[in-house]
Length: 195
Image (cartoon, rainbow, N blue to C red):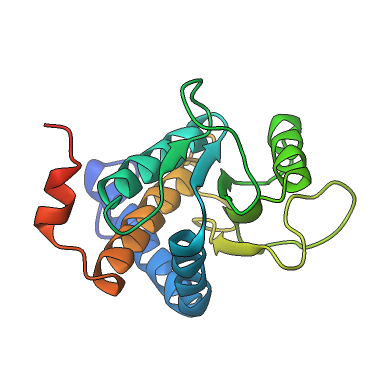
């Protein structure tokens, strides 16, 4: 963070978050092939289910909404937290948002999906830890790792808000990449956008 602004001022906080977004963008650049693989998995899935818990659920819901706009080129997409959705089926894709990937609810949801033959992808905090007792990400899964804002975390960062900011940033980059990759136009989106 720059010293040009008084600590805790709107200018200082905005500058810190802007610098963080640049770091997230660089992290996504390094994972471009994984992001493109996720786009391919999305296009070839029977259906897409987006899931998260707590504030991560909102990032997952946001991605589900964005992907519904693309349904002329992408399969049906559901927010998995909703009661009005299709069940998991073999060949579907589950995209889970979770900072640590350790919540019981999430682990059970992923376990159930895997039992039914659902492909799993994760948006989680970096570094992505693979394997280990009960951990979310396994070999063969697609995983996008989002960096933390700083270590040690800034005093003004409360409750992991950096992960949610990075998750929203990621879903916007992913949505734009899918649109470019599959030739979606603004008119394609407008046909499925609720006004």
